[in-house]
Image 1: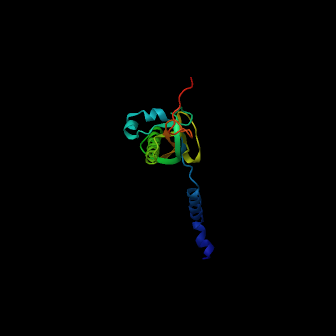
Image 2: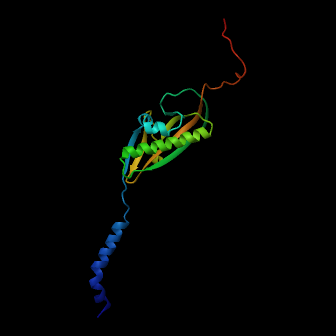
Length: 169
């Protein structure tokens, strides 16, 4: 019996196995749904009040108190499990985690406020005076934030330390 005749009955099986391998090796298209979280609404929840620090945050475009000094700019990206939670709930949790980390870092740097907070999730910058961007996948959600760490107060003017001014009459 020729070698070709011995292999011929296996040809359909080999072809099917090869096709299955090609299909399995094709890149899977993962779900990435863009969601937006209302930062003020989430920060006003009881969970947020118990979780966040007393370092106020102001989204870019939101009015904020005068800034005496800007200490640094910080970035943080957090992921949160989306398993057994809605996209909205998971996005809110990731936002609060990211904000808490920014607050901890701001406090450690000597800052007392976060201003010009913008969303930088998955390399895409999103500016809003009310919302941050979240990307929800099949298993995890991502929220990234960038903020300026500041000290609140009136900016110091050069040459005014130690001198008092009186109004002219």
